[in-house]
Length: 190
Image 1: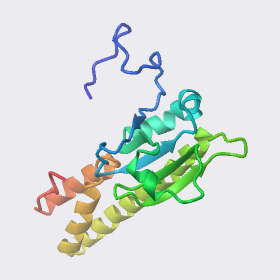
Image 2 (image 1 turned 120 degrees about the vertical axis):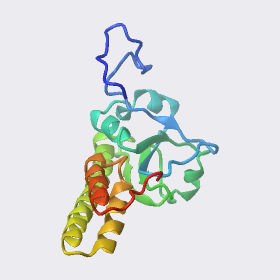
Image 3 (image 1 turned 120 degrees about the horizontal axis):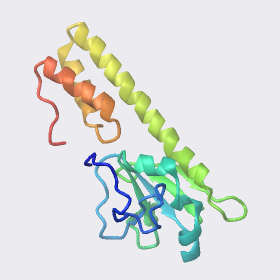
Image 4 (image 1 turned 180 degrees about the horizontal axis):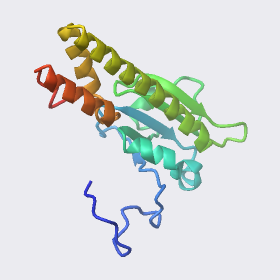
């Protein structure tokens, strides 16, 4: 991302008339490669109409998560993940998975068949915060280990934090700095 100021006549990257909170949803078909890092949010709309009018199309929170390695995927019956859906799953709904397709959580529609964006934001937010806690505590533990001279364990924790740089750039940068200090290569290329 270049940091040049946006000009008013710059063409909008979004088809929704330049809505700054539009979520970058993309259809996940049988040939779409699944992301290898971060999280994947699958949204299964109930109809084409739902796809056009749902509250899930605009969300500052979801858009922010999308910039931190949470892939926003629209699923249908052709999506490979659809085969893994629980028997009681009924669109509209959303599932949060890891890159291996393990289901981390789900958000279901209310009795009126409406899937509220708030529910989906909570679903992603909970997992994101949980992972953030883990990364922060790994970093803290690694620093303590490094301080007490347990270099090998410190390095392995730091490398695992550094690999999360897409979701948690702050802790990952710190981990990379510490790895340099310890004279160890960072886990570059991952």
